[in-house]
Image (cartoon, rainbow, N blue to C red; front, side, top):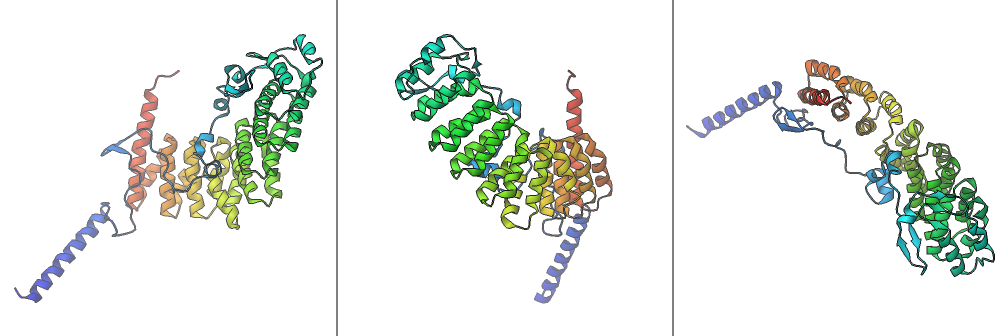
Length: 417
């Protein structure tokens, strides 16, 4: 066999191989790089057709959300239901008679004003507020594991001592009394202190008093402080305390801040807060930022969209799927809906899975349906399984159906309460 015959033989073998690959690909066997078909993206199987429960977290790019960026920690630590936020008393600090600061179960107790003790007037008589020892003795004598013996009539004395004393341990004990007395006058006094103080440690403690107050006035004060302070660390502390209130009344003041400030850092913090506390209105605001023509606003909107966890945001996010034409934005909305895991989103996501023109977005929709885990998605997925021409999408729909059926079977097997 001469070299010409060998060349023809090699060419014939290559042609036969190429035809074989095309035939296999048309039968649904994924052939890398042969076409635009991608291998299946839902690979949760324990075996060939077995799927682990629960499914993995939604995959996404490596870019963190806005909360994690601002806090320098895992933003998921800030995602708590309001009940969980207040389920356990927090450890605060107290001063012992020698003036040192130590953890104390007594101060950590969620006490309140236990009623004014007649001894208070005796102790107050002749009290020199400039004398650290006298003030410390007075505060220790009127504080118990059940709460404070002081009441609203003693607020003037407490705030005067707060202004005159600069020792943090003593100020910490003053704040412990104030947060247990509570009320509008305490909120007003703490806000006034924040407006005049230069002591960062005391200001952080004052912010925690506002958080424990948790009323609309305190929340508005936290928003104002968040917007006005130039100290980045205090901004972060204000944001954390604001989120821990779980109070949606922060929405309107946050919207006013976003509409009026030109400071980029303040916009970041305000948008991060409204994504958590604003419910539907907060989600609409985040979407507006994510679709902004301004690069900075679009960037923080995009990151903040990743942080939304409120079920109140689901209708707004679901409706946006039919509004936006940006495939990247729609993909992130689908991921966010997946992480919220609310069955109300299944209808809108199913429409995307069925009719979306962008293959990647359709894949993301199918993954989100799997993460939500509702059997309501099965009819749409069956339609895809039976009619879809793209093998990768068809395969993903088939695997998701199998997974959802297993989820439903396990739910049915659980004893009813």
